[in-house]
Length: 189
Image: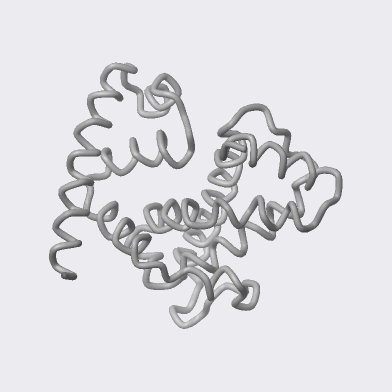
């Protein structure tokens, strides 16, 4: 089975109530979603929340609303999860920027679980570091195209550019990302 059909099959089984299929559906996308979270955190939140905790909160929210998710195409699940993650990050940002909050307060989240224990892969950390070094527009185009699975036309609409401009921007962003990944690998060798 191709990865696309695996996602569709797992969604179908999970929708029918198969807990193991639900768990596997989420686990096969964990690494990609953690990179998405790390790229979206921003400096302020990065010091206050862990990507794994955001992912766990997002999984809990997805679990609660899974019955409303419909598999419409190959990238639908990742786009849905990215929207949930964006909402969780917005909530965390609002929490920490509220005028009456004390710096030492932290939002309540689920206890550390298997996602946190599993999440320290070296390649993911290198990718996160490389993405963090990109300009905002390069990071955004990569997230839209590769993490949210949007077409060039859909990304163009979000970034208020033409599809051709998005393709060019993505090419430049990938070159920059490759340079940062290469320099990060050389510094760890």
